[in-house]
Image 1 (spheres, rainbow, N blue to C red):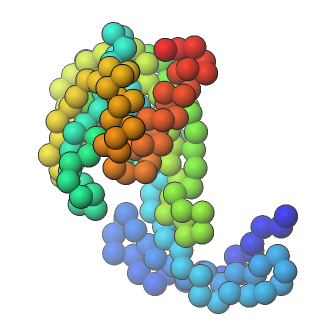
Image 2: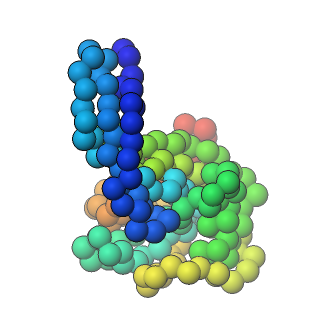
Image 3: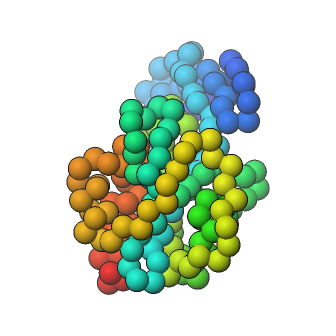
Length: 184
């Protein structure tokens, strides 16, 4: 299979550092052209499933603008320009919770939207996280830090309490990684 080719791109708008909307001119493998393919540019980001030494997982109970009601959420945020994903994951865990972890596992990366871009998500599992400092978060939403045991986080996942697809994905991938690598 041949990839699509980008022939040209133009920026329609760039309201801030978090979003640009572009129009791409594409050539398909069969030679057809598409002159107006929409493309979203957002920063790549990290999500972290963090576990403390007693086996409980850190997560937030919080609200988000695009989410109806309250959701459970892992730690995470945008990768700064020039920053490596692992460093961003370590920084986000520390800033958002005050916890640091000595053991890190990269458990996957993927584009957010296969046809429209919107950045790449990088998932990490942090083990043996310990509280070392206070929070330094600048999040706009209200957040409550929770400690959930394995059963409770699995039940929350099954009930759809992680209302953002990437958040449910990191929890499911992290739990699966623990089982596959016998880290449970």
